Image (cartoon, rainbow, N blue to C red; front, side, top):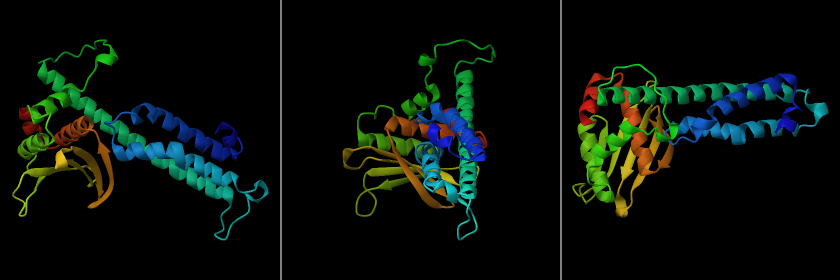
Length: 259
C-alpha cells in the first residue's frame, strides 16, 4: 500500500494520509460488537476495499494519460481527488457516529453506576481494564429474561412480554398459528434515531433456534440487516434504549424502574 501511495500525485497522497489516520483512530472500535453496525461496516469497507480499489483504478491508467481529460472532461488525476474527497468525508462522518454512540453508552453506564451505588463522588479511580464489564446491559438482560435463558421459545416469550411493558409504542409481537393466536415466534423493537431514521431489533425463536438481528431503516426503507449473537443483540438494544431515554423522560423513568 505504501509503495502505491507514493505513486500518487502529492495532493492525493495528503488525502490518503488523512483517511488512513482516521481509519487508524477507528481501528480499536471496529472490533467492538456494540458499535453501530452500519458505521462499522462502512469504515471496514473503506479500509479493506474502497480505498485500495480507488488507488488501484487510478494506477491502472498509464501514467502519460492520467492528465488527459475523458469524455466527461475530467482527467484521472481529477477523478482520483474527487473520489478520495468522498471517502474522506464518509470516514469522518462514520467516525463521528461511532464516537457519539460510545459517548452515549459511556454516559448511560456512568449514570447507572452512580445510581446503583448511590455514589456522587467525582474522584477518578484506577482499575484493571480487563475487569470492566457492561454492568448495566447485563442487569438489563438478567431482568429481561429471568429464568428463561436456556429455552429459545421462552427467551422470545419473556423478551416480548418485558419489552412490551418497557416500550409498548415501539414493540411488535408476532405469533404463530392460523390466525396469529399461537405461541410468540418473533418480537421487533424499532427505535427512532435523532436523524429521523431508525434501528429495528428483531428476535425470533422459530424451530427452537434463536435468531437475533438489527436492521437499519432509512426513510422507512430497510437498508441493511446484521445478524448478531444473543448477548450482542441485548447489549446493543440496551444501549439504544438508554440513548433514546436521554431525550424522552417517560422511557427514562420506565428504564429506571425496569433496571
